[in-house]
Picture 1 (tube, one colour):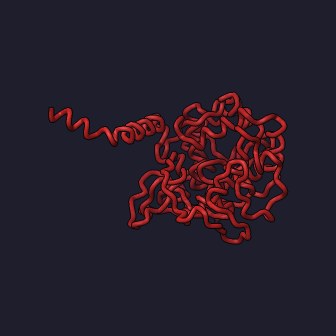
Picture 2: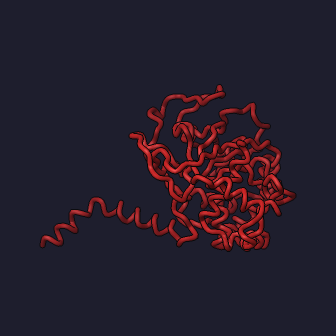
Picture 3: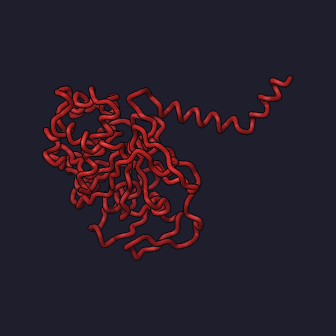
Length: 327
């Protein structure tokens, strides 16, 4: 009787337990898919008043929090900093095609949980949308929302809309938005908004073998401020180790990154630039190549490169590449 009473006492929290286990199983796919690079998004908010009009630094526009969450009219905080957006970028197409600027932002800089599109080759953007559409580019963590959103976009966008968005984003100037800091201990963090936010009560924690990337001001992240620089904590020695891998490979077992991405990792031809990009985004793509989640014919070269890379080496390469934009 006591045993059944104990089971009944779990009833109120059972849905929570099931949800946590489900997410954990969906995210953790084995040693090649590190859980930390797929932070979740609890529902708590840093914005105290959802009805108040907010502003962000260097911007005159004002939006409420609900307005900033409109997938068909995302906020344009700094409208003078970019050309006029095509309709698909600014508003998408109801009911199923979200505005490109909702995730990738009007200036194309995106955020750590998704890709920076500004300055990418136009043909490369078109090819990646096609890969999402035919599932030759998939999310290595099936339960992670940001990685799955592009599949829905690709399935609903017309070729003309894709071409229009690709032309717009490729013409934008890339400005680094990641500040890389080497550390052994970091401020205590929690997953929030698909990045990491500081725990309000303070304190520190060991970084270990991971990259922890997030905004210095979580409210600005929630408001989708496209002018904010994110902070990425990386293990000590990562940048120098990554420089060695990027320029000479790993003891002859992996091709040096500069071979295809150029001496400054600024890209060559249709090979995309990776210098200055968000390091957690870079790691997710390396994981996708290694696990076969990215499997287009063009991915085969990268699959061979990352096959022998450990997660620690991926961290180092990503740290070095990201640091090139701010050094």
